[in-house]
Amino acid sequence: MALSSSVKGTLTNHKDLIHDVSYNYYGDRLATCSSDQHVKVWEKDSNEDWVCKNTWKAHQASIWRVVWAHPEFGNVLATCSFDRTAIVWEELVSVSASGEIHNQFVSKHTFVDSRTSVSDVKFAPKNLGMLLATCSNDGIVRIYEAPDVMNLTQWNILIEIGVKMSCSSISWCSAMRLQPIIAVGCDDPGSSPSGKVILYEFSDGMRKCTKIDSIPSITEPVQDLCFAPNIGRSVNLLAIATKDVAIVQLKSQGKSQSTTRFDQKIVGQFTDHKQTVWRLCWNITGTTLASTGDDGCVRLWKSNYLGTWSCCGVLKGDGSLIKSQTSGEPVGLLSAPSASKYIPHYHRSVSSPGV
Image (cartoon, rainbow, N blue to C red; front, side, top):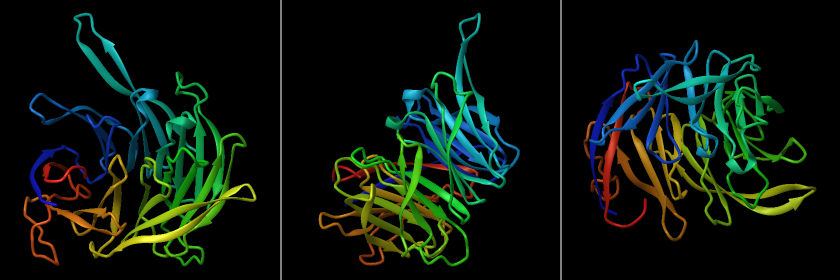
């Protein structure tokens, strides 16, 4: 696969480290959050440049995560912070007397149940309704529900799960044919015989979560994890970021005592970053994984027709080509946006269809 690329940086004017970057469902808007306690929302102009349209102080401390809800529920964001809160924001649009359109994001609800830093926040798949999951360093996963999607000021707590380890990240499985699955990653430095990733099955009818499995092969503190979008696959893929990148295949064995059981298989494990890996992201079809770490690179991973995963691109922000360790040929370019006040943007041409 031949890759060519150009890099274009955008000065974000964040005054501290950017911890998370999130595209909306359509990919035409971008949200960033930072240790400067601000959230910024970006849109492309007619020149294909990203322009900041909204910026506001969202929390009283560093903001770890920002995430968009499905557009079926409107233009809604959720953020979480070291200040022990998570907040839901909704975009409100108004028209002035002169006909100018103004939009701003307004705080609709603040979740204050956590006693420690809220480390991650994720909206559930849209078929479950307006559900929001948070996890905290106090070792508790909380799932909230907005009973009326037209009134996001009202939220009820459905479930509290005591994980008994410091939680760093959560991910919902989007496979429609299974009961909803939530993966929880733990960054507790202590040893755990059952591993640092735990799987829970969410029962919407019973309003409860049941622990169904763990991944004992993951023993290092987990910084991020992410289920791949499932478009017709018979298995689910879970990417896990520790000091390495791991891709775990989960194949359902069916129900056992009313809960789903999985066969587990590590189909990819990579030490290329050689330092802590902080963020993971799948493409929309779940066929390509991007990871970023303290080495200052974004690395792209893809499997071949035999199911063998390998690196298909190494991307640096200064525009320099990173050469393959095996062939010596350039394999890509880009940079990791983590720990930066800039957002690099990438224009790629691929000689074969799909990435």
